[in-house]
Amino acid sequence: MQPARFRILVLNGPNLNLLGSREPAVYGEETLETISDRLRAMAPELGCEMEFFQANGEGEIIDALHRAPATFDGVVLNPGALGHYSYALRDAVSGVGLPVFEVHLSNVFAREPFRRILVIAPVATGVIVGAGAMGYELAIRGLLAQLRR
Image (cartoon, rainbow, N blue to C red; front, side, top):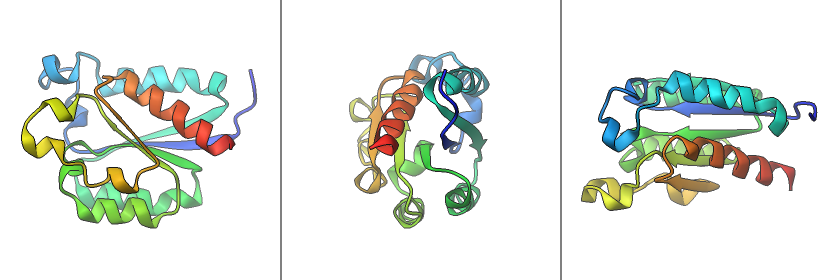
């Protein structure tokens, strides 16, 4: 096991606290707590530390991003529905100067037309869609690969 070198913020937006009970056919049956616990257990083998934050308010998520550069090397962000329309969140992602991987559990491109628009994606380092809860792990691995370059 390698020592922890990178600190990652895993940031979750609106309604992700309802994972496991909200539309499990779309978002899966795993809770956000279960996903976070699994990722936290993987952190030592990946050579990183992770902190988790979830908020239903856009301002809270933006504030967490603004604070991130003081403590974290990168961010994995599941913006939830904010990813489809929040230009304020997009501006925060582009303004903090950290690599940010955007995650969406479902394949947004196979859903309603409004979900096919991702306003944060053009300023994100990477985007993972449709991989379910595994999308977080893929994003973390991608973020770490980017940080190690």
